[in-house]
Length: 405
Image 1 (cartoon, helix red, strand yellow):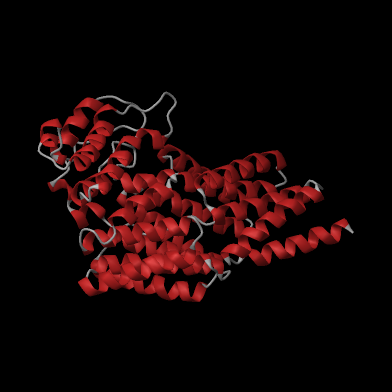
Image 2 (tube, one colour):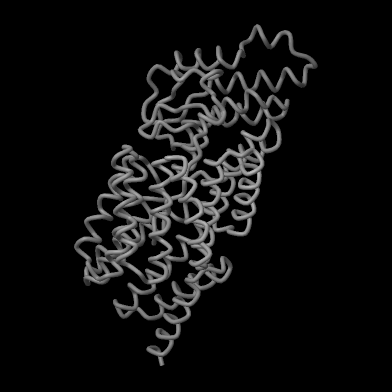
């Protein structure tokens, strides 16, 4: 399974939240130190306190602000909290602010910087953790409410979330809308981002030539702008499409360029994804030692970042490699954990891949009935998503059925 190199829009540059939300506003997702200070700073920047509430009318409107303020001031995550629990106060405050259509304060919560390893704003951190539906709720609430620059952010994020959930037609629609706004505004960096994201959706659907066309157009824009991050991501995406066409050596060359740029920029997520894609290509060439080395590094980076999708992809790729090496216990452990994660985050494409991989494992273990069950589940999901995996599942199921006769 490839690690996509989806480009990221510079949210902070587009919205300039530093003018309204202090960069020192933070909340650690691993420990609750200095929370009172960061809350005070956040409330000051939001210009929201109990004195402010007294002047708000009618009572129904004031009640929504009071509820938002209570979530921001009093909420404490439970013991052994999930990552979502750590940011629940912000999300609930956001929901109450949408009820009074306070889009400016909602926007400030959207781009609230979190004091985590990734240093990402709230909405991007939700993506890293795999909370796509919570992320989509924020974007859908703000879309069309505060101008085109915010629309660009929301449409990009919505498209990525739909993609992660396997809804490629909706993802393409969002990215095309993103592209049309960027073109109207003459915002070339966002045009490059949208082109790359559209290309990725066609890649997932197995339309590799069309994907390459979008990736090349995005690469030209990134080169024109001198955008090193965008260049690296476009190169990585081209590597994925060439892999899909079976040109693994060319894919490796592109992924190596992507990796070099990510390392130059200190982009940990980009480094991990480039390593994952290199491992994917080495696996296709039968170089299992190189493949495992790359995937183990990708797994380590993803776990440190709590990047759930990346963790699942690395585990899946490692499991496939262990399977080819005949290391079945390790393959089973990796593949089962990968499947668990894809189900937890709602990644239907990854779930289908995981089920097909487990079917292959049980075929090797001579557990034909179990293999058939996994393969049938994979085929059902793949058909619903209309992805190339359908062909692989049909071939595998035919083989398993023939073996059972």
